[in-house]
Structure formats: structure tokens, C-alpha cells
Image (tube, rainbow, N blue to C red; front, side, top):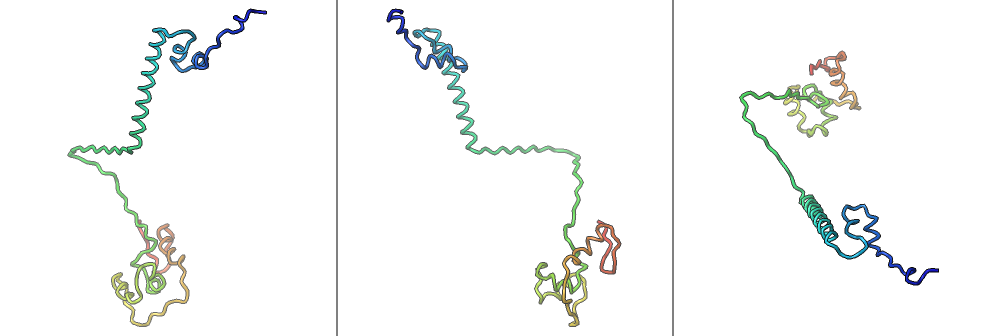
Length: 169
């Protein structure tokens, strides 16, 4: 067999093995077997300075992120001619107040925000005749019928009855 001196070859340290097998730039030049040389010190200085600059930039970005910055940019220009976009105003009311009958008001007062004692004032404000005491509400009320009288006119269907006006919208 061999001599005892050959069997006891010094094993490289774990950091040397890691540095030799690492793909991180510079580490394979720093951690080599052997003593400290000027070349290794230069590689170590370059690696540490690059790492510190990187960590400084990351820390700055994290600090700025947690400050929640807001950026508002206003650009004011003087112009003798200004072009505005077309504006379309759409009426989203599902019924026309001017076409509400007293029976509709009786059943819909809660949704319209009208108290029962204010019916006459509300009807007068709409231009409808004020009740002379002969009003008797219907026993039932169909909300779908109430809303559909204006929908059919909006869709271009033929309006039936005097209550359904033709809408041009």
C-alpha cells in the first residue's frame, strides 16, 4: 500500500468546494485552494463592492415602495381653439313623471318619496288634475306593466292607448 503521508492529503474546505462549483460571478476566483494572493484580494474587493451597491439599490427601492409615493402630472396648455368630445346625456329613469296617474302614485308613493298627504301637491306639480275626492285605487298593481309602458315606446313599438306617448330619444 502507500505511505501514511499519501493517505492524509488535505481535503479542501467546504467554502473552497462551494466557490469552485458556484456560478456566482467572482466567487470561483476568490475561493481557491492555496494562500491569499493579490489577485484574490482584488476579486474579493470587486465582488464585495458590487454586492454592496446591489444591496444599496434594493434597499432604496424597498424603502421607496413602502413610502407609497403618488405622482400627479398636470399639463396646462393655452389654445385659441379647443375641441370638446361629443356629450350624450341619457335619461335612465324607467318611467316618465309627467305620465304618472293617481293610481300609479298611490301604489308607487313609497318608492317615489311622496307621502299620502302630499298627493295633491305632487300631482299639481306634475301638471295632472288634482283629486276631487272621487279617486278609488285599483285592488292590484302590476309593477311590470307600470315600467313597460315607457319601454315599449322607447323600443319603437306602437304605443297603445293615450297613456303611452311616443318618445324620441
